[in-house]
Length: 625
Image 1: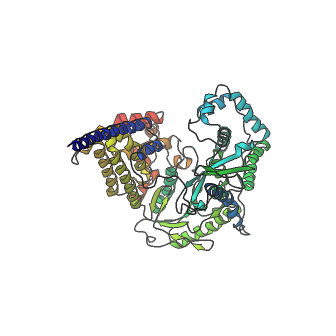
Image 2: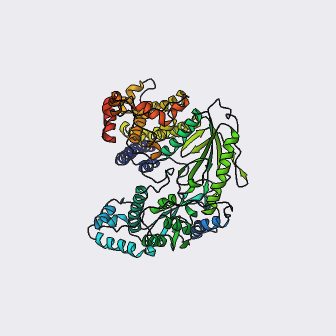
Image 3: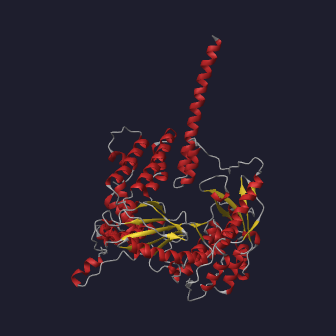
């Protein structure tokens, strides 16, 4: 009898303890979500604490018990350091007929300006508190605490580096964090090396980067087709520009043949000598060129694996990934690639490159692509960049009833015939041969469904408000990405996405399946996806009309011009020119659908002075639902 009483009391106290633990866990998770709104990485970290994961370890796998962590770290570091020279040694010289394209030079020499004390203070204040610390051990929190005492000393140190074209060796030594991509986890080649440099070096790099970017922008030196690491540019603007040209080719009765190029370890194989030669041709003065020479030479790195740091090794080529100057130097390196193309168009996003040609028959398209691929191959050989022909793909895009519909492209790089695919994931969006975006929507719905499953599991720890924040932070951005690209897909595809949002509303609010969607959206202050896409389109068009987007976008959005004085009032109202097209499909081109929808807005809204005033005016006029 006594034993039975003890068991009952144990069960009571155990249940109370479990209830208390769940309440404390719920309060903790809610606090984490409240304090990390708009920070998806922190939100995922909080979710991982309550949702079991199949593989949560960040350690690098080791299938050889004889290898220590130091052996693995040294192996990774050696692989990363020797990757570039090894690839470069196997690259043949360009053909005899190859003519090296010129490098566009600025009218005035580029000079690195000196820093001011105020600029250094501002840079230190802008540092995130938890920014990764380099090998020097100086963290951002320390610099921010000492920002009153040390800016003058740091300013003198930074300016001396610029005047003397010299950088302290300790600032050029990076610690590498291997980031797994895909494939075998025991193979170092399947990891991306991300550099963590000393924070003082990052302050100098930011100053030099801003000065160089401003110089190149003011003199129009950067390739217009390059969208990587540039203000107002994005993967979406790059993709829209490619598709706009393809839609208009369809309208003219032509098809388009595309070749997606895959460069092998492009950032790690940049040749320092070639890069410095291009900087010299761009009209860098002697001191600035000397500073960049010192920046690239005598660089060392060590790799941190499983909390073990390898020995240091010298870097012979490549620009450091994770640095501030590295991406800008890389797009400078790629800047004159487009000059070797005679028949094709090109779009670049850092090293993601696509070239395409238009024609009425398969032979015309193949001939244009093949001739320019020979030129591209020569350019890559001349610049010591390696192309992975087995991962390069070709695709033929045409209207559904065109004679090209069921044909395949046959183009080759070196001795390899490229695989002709019916769909390809380009900059995060699946493109298909008739631009239906069916595969993209299928992939998108699977991804959204998985995340909704995560929210459903986490729902018992959170209030409706918390779940709504979670949905808007972790799920809605996935749906929003590229919605201007796929917004003209079939009604069934768009309905499938809206169904997922309706499901999310029911999970968040814990309401029956027959609850009207309008009530749910009102309670959560969520826009229907169709209205959300239209809103994004209007914001995009406003930015394009006011030159807040890349030139290749803004130049295709033009204000109407009239010949008579009678119609001048309409011109002053800010209406945009709508190009005439032959096919309904062409109305999916942004150069058509943007002005077509924008002109339906009232005049006072089109005349908004800023993006924010346009946004707030739009919501006042149309509301959220």
